[in-house]
Image 1 (cartoon, one colour):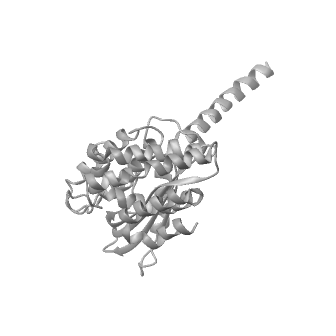
Image 2 (tube, rainbow, N blue to C red):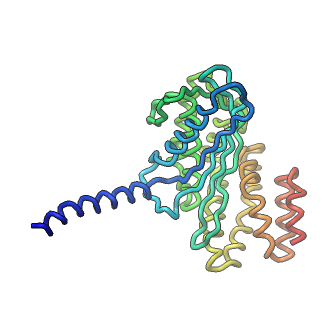
Length: 306
């Protein structure tokens, strides 16, 4: 009787622990949120700490996809929020710096997926206000922006594992952008406002005429970086042979935001990859990349020096 009673108590506990672990593992992102309110004086700074904790919990517990991620597969992200102005008790103007990294297969190395500064973010927040995402119902620009970038990052991650694998997440981000446009007080969403607006970014990723970029993204990560642990030369060669697709992207859409996103995210890594290339490959790569990114020529000089 005692044995049965113990089993009756322990078994549900074990099941509960197992389900809890599975729930933690299922989340897609491992996010660190920081809020810098040094520019704001004469106000209650506790509200920013409360918001920081709230957003950290929201981004780390929200389930954005139907895919299960192991702990090792979760996307490491940082959301750094700088509060520039506080117009009243609940309205803020901020900028947002976001980075996201993808683990490389069988390696301790992580590769940047996204590195972007969003300079125009106005949002409202009252301490104690719940933060939650509901599909097809945007309650605030606070939720809209964070959800938009979460889906964008997932799209980039899934694109890096399968050809055009992130399409569903880019469409979800596009839906948020479309809904957000209906609120004229929410900045950064207006169509044709700027090529690097949120609307401009997601329009580039959902433009079928720019699928060459997304194909390159898959080749670069899955057939290149993920292969380098097993065969460094083969993985490197695959990446170097894929990079000319960037020229095709520029020819298809001159001025596309995708080239800026690539340079901000990948150029340091690309320069390092060239360090083991042949002299002929280095010369060809330097010519290609300086033509595509002329303002980064000093950074790219390292290709020839390595």
